[in-house]
Structure formats: structure tokens, C-alpha cells
Length: 485
Image 1 (cartoon, rainbow, N blue to C red):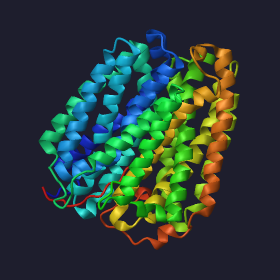
Image 2 (cartoon, rainbow, N blue to C red):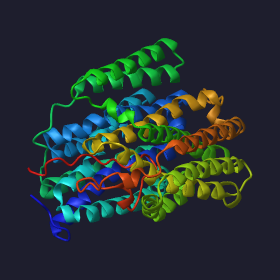
Image 3 (tube, one colour):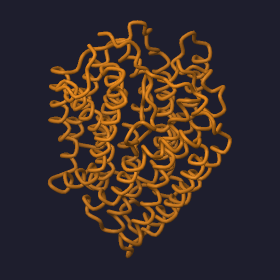
Image 4 (cartoon, one colour):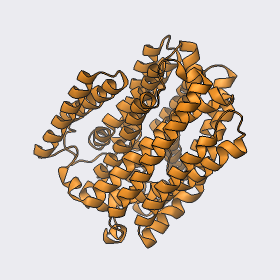
């Protein structure tokens, strides 16, 4: 069934995708805001907080590639529904967790649900709407999702303050129920009739490698880290020898594709490290309430909401290289300015200047880098190229959260000491600024004509057409395949 824009069913399908994907987007913001309260109630160490964040990121990064393939093969609505229900049940388990490790286990389950539903929203829009209406539908989804993301920090802070951090998870249950009801009523089932079997073995080995590497870093276990590296090498060997690899090695033959993904890794690693420590610094060292700590970063989302589409169009017109260099340098400058967010500083002088420059830099780079990755890949691999870029971004955040606290001396319960936390915060900002700037330098080697050289893809929307690019990760555009039910 092909859905035309402007019909009641079109509005219902759009609402389904916004509610489901928005729920996953908001959750990451809410959890960051809630971290100090979670740590206080569950008597959590820095390592515990790392696992609360990384349990989710680990499952999401490891499974997001195979999740898109599952939707193509078994039905996009079906897999999306499974993801929404899974996410809702996992949120319930998070909300009733009695200790840190119950919460970590529930967060891993949340990550699995997030991986199943994250690529599903765009896959449903691409395969359900008439071809001439897809760009409009995806633009509306992107813009409205951006509005939801903009209010996320405020909503998260209010939920934490009204009752408990548990409410920030429990609120997902009615949201998931509404999404399921809308999907069953209005979303047609579509699948790719030529889709092959998803590569479960590679996914399992890749997930194990990421888990062991992350665990080895967080727990400072050389043995676990070494096994993780071995598993990731085995994953690469399997991909190189497979007739139908999950990640085609030929993608990495293109220099621009490789450099754009290196930029993505460093940018989102720096971003992930800063955003986690920022909510701790604001609440513990500056005495902000959860609500105000959440509001502090809202200018970043607003700037991206207003500027992402224009940034994508500029890259298409003039080439992406300048933005890929300047954007990370502005992000680095914003991080350096945030070093003024110390006890005694006001929001207007200590936080806002850095947040604004940081947001301008992100708006400058996110849409162009995703468009560059897609354009540098062969047309037949556009979906998996986007998935790789999203997984690279999530992995960057995952490893930053695992590595950064130990590197800056933030261990044990030191995050509850304003003096120790401020020292670690300023050091972390300097390191993240350097990482972001290095990412910009990698962009000097990219092909500035890559967007013009790539032929237009009717089935594949470009990120520059979207109204908003998210803060938590690059947009995921998956292969739409056959639109037949």
C-alpha cells in the first residue's frame, strides 16, 4: 500500500514514527540528567554510572546494522513494533531496578530495543509513502523529532524533580503503548522480497568484541580488553571473506568514506564525553537543579533545529570540506569555553557562550558529514553506509564514556566532590576539544566534490533534506528496498 501525503493515514504513520523514535531519543537525554540522582540513591561509583550509560550504547552500537536488515527481511512494521514493545518493557525494568546491576541489565535490554526501532522509523516512511511525498514526510519527521528532542532536557529534569529518576523511565510505558496502538491501526507492513538472511554470526562476534573491549577499559582488565580486540579482528576477517558481508569491505576503499567516519568517531566521542560530564558538573559543582541542568544544553538542540537543513544545503552547493573542517574546530572552541563553567560562574558567563559556539559547530558539521558518508559509498550500499556511520558515532561515545573518567582521575565516588569533579571536568574538556579538532583536520583529505559527483538517488533521501539532525547520533537512512507488503 502506498500512502499519499495529507491523508489521515499519512498523519497516523508519521505520528507513529515520531513517537517511537522520539522515545528513544529522549531517553538518552533524560538518563544523562538523572545520573546524579541515580548515583545518590543507588550509592553508585563512577564505574557504575559508566555501565549505566554504556550498557545501552553497547547494545545499540553492536546491533543497529543487523536491525535494519531484520526489518527488510521480516517486515519493517513488525520489527519496529518489537523494538517499541521491547523498549517499553525494558524501561519498566529500569524503573523498578533495586540496585545498580539490575539497572545496567535493563539498560542493555533497552539498547536492544533501541537498535530495533532506531532505523525502523525512516524505513517505514521510505517504504510506505509515495515516492514524490517521501522527502516531505522525512522532513516532517525530522523537524518534529527535533522539537521533541529540544524539550527533552526540560521534560527529563521535571520528571526527576517531580518524583524520582524512576519516573524518567516509567514514562516510556504509556508512550510505547500509544505507539503500538497507532502502528497496528495505521502502518502498512512492507519488506524487501529479495532480502537475504541477516548475518547473525558477525553481529554476535562484533557485539562480543565491543562488550569485552568496553568492559576491559571500564574495569581496567587487560585480559578482557585483549579478547575484545581479538573478537573485533575476527569480525573484520569474516567480513572480508563473506560473500554477503554485514559491512562490505569495499566501502573502506574510498578515502573520503574512511576520513568522514574517522571524523564522526572523534566528534561523537568528544560529544559523548562532554555531555555526560556536563550534567554532573552543573548539578554537583554548580548546584543546578535537574530541570535547570537539562535546560542548560537546550540552546544546542535549538541551534541544530534551526540550522541543520541550511547546513546541508550549503554543503551540497559549495562542497562539504570547509564545513567538515570549521565545524569541529568550532565544537572544540565551544568545549574550551565551557571550561569557565566552574563554581561561582553564572549561566550567562560560564555556560551559555560555550554551549552556543558548541551548537553552531555541531550544526555546521553533522548534516554534511552524514551526506558525505552516503555520497562516498556505492549506491547499492547507501543503507549500510549510513548504518556504519551511525554505529561509528555510537561506538565513539561508548569508548569515550569508558575511557575519559579514568584518564581525568574521576574514579570511585570522586564525582560527588565539587572540587575533584571541577578539576576532572576542565581536563576532560581540553582532551575532548583536542579530539574534535583532530577530527576536523582529517576532513582536509576528503573530496570536496563528492556530493556533486554522486548521482541523485530517488529511493535514498539525503540528510541535507532533513529539517533536523540529532545530537545523540547521525541520522540513520536505510535502504528502502521493495515497498510491497
